[in-house]
Image (cartoon, rainbow over all chains, first blue to last red; front, side, top):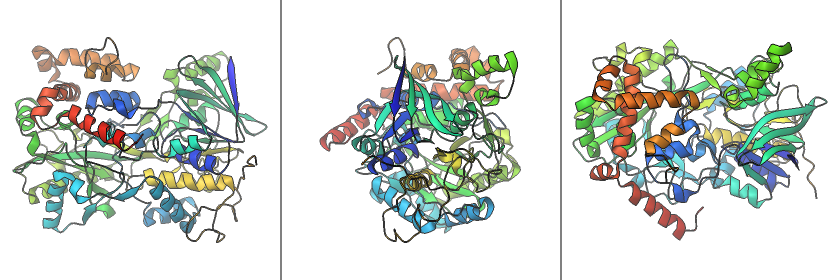
Length: 524
Length: 90
């Protein structure tokens, strides 16, 4: 039996984009249904134990892996809050240089005053503030000392945290609920304002009627059966890796040839150092400090740290050397290197590949496979290009310099023994990838992008996208604030209202002058 | 906190892995736990690295060992839980 729901807007995904939209729309008077594939996570079950939390809080236990040279692990959160549940909480506004690139290369005319109001609104909602130096931890103190001695630009990061006590396990479920992820900020607001929030809902298809959105078809967990959500609008916010499959599986967004392409990530690695002083990296805010001296070169250093099990997993040593270094765990420091990539990857699904592409029996058979879970699992292709490889070589050497300047006794680079950074090949690097963006990129022209500047799907009425997939270029900084601000902007555009804040109502808001304004006719 | 029938947190982790990786990880860990298996894996550096990383994560997740190194997961989670309840947080 199929259960039917009717609303103004159906939002798919409760991460950085979807949760924000659901709350803003519901508070603006729209009837909202928010569908989330993952579960609600009870913070009482957060154990601060790494393997257990990886299994519970991450999609595929954190083992989403790219295919390419080198293969890269790309951890993604699962559940209410999405990846905001498991990220480090670092908040940066979109750099001005990036906004300029969007204007010049993608013809996106984003009103910066309006975007500023969106940022301010989000920052207030999730309590963004600079890390208190007392909570930053001694791991940050080591990096700070190195940066000061070298004269490198640095500072404490801004994070979305309230009442943080430095538990040191941001990425494994904050036991204090200090990190203000969207699952405990925007989702409750959405509920409070009347939105229906359904977890365990896997969206199968976005259905159209007469060239415009009609309804969402989903299945629900625990025997809930099939679900149809009929609405005026659907906003997809399933994330950069999964939104392309949803669109392609519904036969949408394919005509421009850009869907699933242009994948940008922040490939990252980390360096350990053995210090003379006690560091206790498992205590304090793991990502509290940054060094941006080389940001213009696409190289950013940010703090990273964790409990012994986390350190043991990532320490680039083996055998007796690993055991000896782990005996000195309290004296180990670690810092991360993140690259603003020029490489571009792609996301594919069998579901997308078969959507209406092949006729006859073969097409029907492939279509069935495409609708099965394995056919919907995204395959991520990503190869590191020469420029990014050079950035890693340079970045690793500089991170070594940072630790040496801080007084490190030994520095452990994430490279095979005997390989110097300058000679490292792709296969020598141990990388993770964070912040995937761009697979349904925004571009003003229909032939160049999947969505337009208002995040509306080109050529179809009633379908929008509001997650990292619309962000058309690498940011060079953590993207959650950008995604949330763009979602806020879209919510007010859909409501036909100005984003509140200083300077609003000046004609710069959503409603004025945009050809894509869609006012939701909220019931009085 | 582990699902019934699951022996350890590492097994929960493997059980939550995507299907194609799950079987491979089980085989890899079974080999990596044996001294001769570890020697065999050393000929395949990428696989050896995965096995070593996971086994290291399991080993240092043991409360007694982690605690000796200055990190008490139970205490960390308990303190957070108490603060959260006291302040009425979600």
